[in-house]
Image (cartoon, rainbow over all chains, first blue to last red; front, side, top):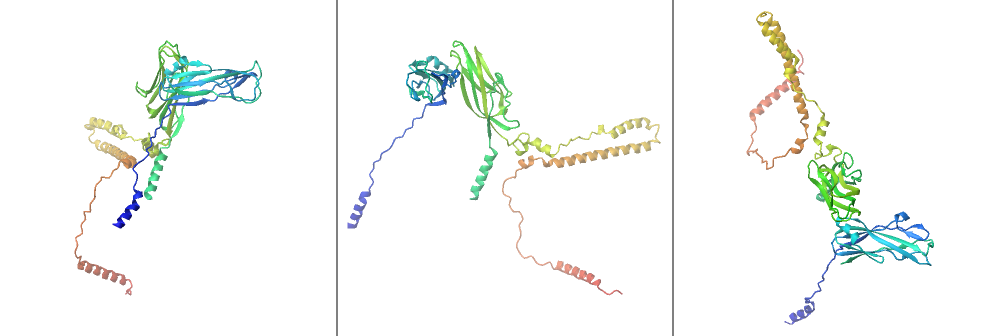
Length: 165
Length: 285
């Protein structure tokens, strides 16, 4: 009896405790994907002007939105209002820009252009159809009042966002 | 281990056999809104279409109804093997549309002419239709695989294309002569009974020649048929009847006694043989 008691005391700390933390894992698939289809390039048709227009020697950047869920997202694209990198500038820069639908994967998306909303340098599109839509954003920067840009490399950013409705 | 090696070899052989090459066509709609499907490298076999991509710009007024069909007919029918419809009715034109489709490897033989058809008011510009395809070169030589089209013809061609002409007795000059002379003979028979024996022999001789000739031709045809029995089909169609083939010969046990009678005969022959051999050494008298 004495031996049995001792054995029981030894085993006592090893009796498992019946409790557990159970994780819940969830994954959300991306239903709106933004891809840079074409990088933009500034042409320099005048000493005071940088432009992405093809006739000015530039390349218009193209952004593609892939949406797998219809009528759930807004495409919000903002053209540049400042250089992200540039030589030191001592005068103001005047920015203009616009964004338009350049290609679609569904005939029904052709209405995006007419229904777009523009405020400031931002253009907003209602993505009512599932599929791919290509947007092109033009950008022009004019330095001072016919003042020549300082020599160097200039970079500006187009901001593309996909916002759930 | 051996099984693993065999399995790997089998997998390698299978993958090697089904190694595909891939390609893209140019713009099939470049010169118009209809096109044929002569695509892929010349001579390539087993070409399969696995994708269709198209782009065009609709030209229309927003209020107009317009439906654009990009499609391919199923070869030899009025049905379509591929058809995509874009309904531009009430929508503005001017914005290019780009679409891509994955096709389930449909053989090129099924694909008829392609077209861009428009219903309603409007048109399309800058049309671009591209097909992606895959193919293998396994059948560039049709004899490389019995499944290749033209395999049988290629085998027969290799074995020698022999022109087989049957024997036509009516076309035999000898027979014709015999028939002509027989008619004449019947007419003259009554008048020339005495001279008929010689002519009859001559006619029979000609008939013998024809029969001999026919036999030769028949023999040649028989030899031809035997030599061409190497048709490959039997090699592939031959099947062994399944089942169990049981032993039917039964040996009864027991003693097999010596054949004393045979032994005596053999011994007598041996004695005689020895005697004959020894005779050559006997001193001549």
